[in-house]
Image (cartoon, rainbow, N blue to C red; front, top):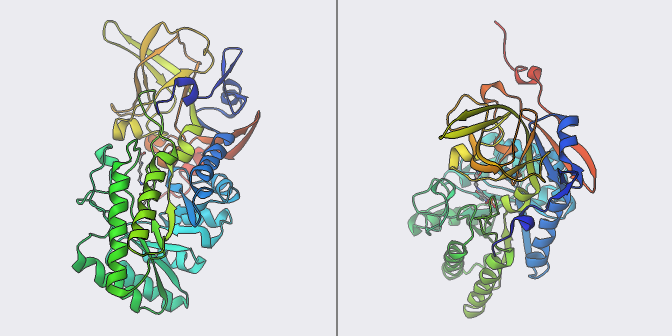
Length: 436
Ligand code: LLP
């Protein structure tokens, strides 16, 4: 399903201004300054509802754990908590934020390919619902910590499903040559599972995979589902143990530009659930609880970034650079993955394009180009530029390179705007530095 531009970016134009969450983005830029991340809360809630319609309400015994690496802030996690979803965290910092948001421990899943002792202690102490084991050293470590703290842990194994993934190599994780997951090699995998069975304070739940990110084709998800189902059957045969849970990861793609295809959740999930049901029936297995871990698809399209246009440099016959007051420090994705974006001049949305320009960032780095050859109307310093679909992996991957402060984050809803992350100050940037 290819979305048309208006569907992709459900913007309202009033007085030639871009509105987001029914708020005038030009007024937001004036009031809160730029760069500024702006989310429409209703668009996030719409995604949560789509997950309920296509998955949670359609199939019993299912969970959705929001992969918070896409955008992990207290306000966002409160929203996810209130929507009734579970949460995936991958570090002490993400977990700390979840605890600060009073996120119920039982609904938290802890992923990560190299969890530290301190992180595991924090997770086990808080009593997280699942620990997803990703390395051969981890089981013994978890067991030891559980013993020390007198706690129990619910264990899943992240496997490397060894499937081909059609996405950017940098965000593909399901292939055999990957740092993620436990290899499928029986001599490696089964002794680990046996260790969990033998440990008093560990309970084995099942298998987890995540094939990659920003996918619009379900082939890799389906191939990996088959791998996980085969493992479940093998565990039944070897140990007469019925796996309780399978986690199919995230990876559902979104629209950055009109070239992207956004598939509905059911496009991925219906065939995976059908395959699972048929396999269980055929092999006399109980269909386990099915969990998914979407990150990007819940928040990406709900977020935009506002920048102020500054320097404009024209190279006749070659290119026109239009510089903004942020760039790779608030959105590393174009520089890191050659990710494509689109945007508009927020105070001139009604004006016709007159030229093609390259929107460039302010960091001292040649790769700091946000959008190449974008048609825009006549622009000048002081205009506000809005980039669409920056809600996932924008704020969460922001950096202080060139000592640029991390921008503020605003949630908008039905015409109301609220600061959910304040802009970092210069003083905060150097607060941990020691003057000698
Ligand atoms: N579960 C696991 C175990 C993951 O590793 C990931 C993403 C997800 C879930 C969520 O995937 P999503 O639904 O967001 O595609 N920084 C990159 C994306 C890296 C994703 C890594 N893992 C980017 O900006 O494209």
